[in-house]
Length: 256
Image (cartoon, rainbow, N blue to C red; front, top):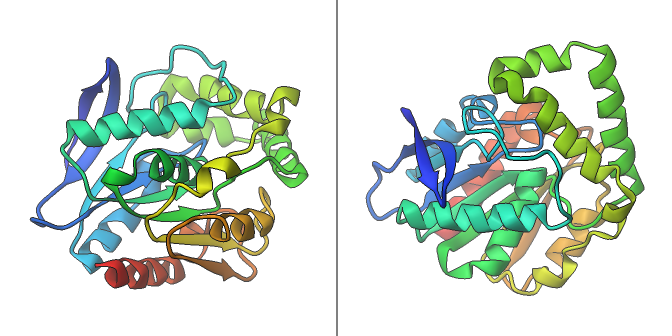
């Protein structure tokens, strides 16, 4: 897939889009708080090929090859704003049958988008998403923030994000570690999700308990299923890619 910069409501986003399968859904990938298009590696292409679906992978604003965010300071509703931007991006590309595949923050953004824009979302695969803040999440973010000060993670991230690394680390850690964010909760939106949902989570996820999964699948209005993977942490698609790929293929083929 060749990449390009697209202007969405004045925001410059880097996208890779392959729409060679006519009249088929588009799988849209939404990365996590330190991720980007490149870090999905070959997972999107494999899922696209196996399901014969189109695929859109993009760098959220501030990440990868997209333009920098204007400020690292985030409001409590920052993921809702990102869901709005995703909706605008789908409109710009005339995508009205998206299968959203989101990881971590990307999973949350996928859930919000499905609740607010059901007309353009055909299904959701939420991997390790969050619907409220838990102590384990705060501890995980805090540990990652401390590690950034002592290990080579910032240097490794610079390969993908360039000089934007300090801003994305600050944006992510500052909001999640703030007192004002502890009350953040999107459970009230879940009843508006009518599209089929698959929630994937590692049983030993260091950023969230299985409460995130149980409370999500029990409150959506559409069909829902969970896929809990033993002895796996926060990034199942990297830790056990074949398991996640096969389950995602099965889910997408079922809804098609």
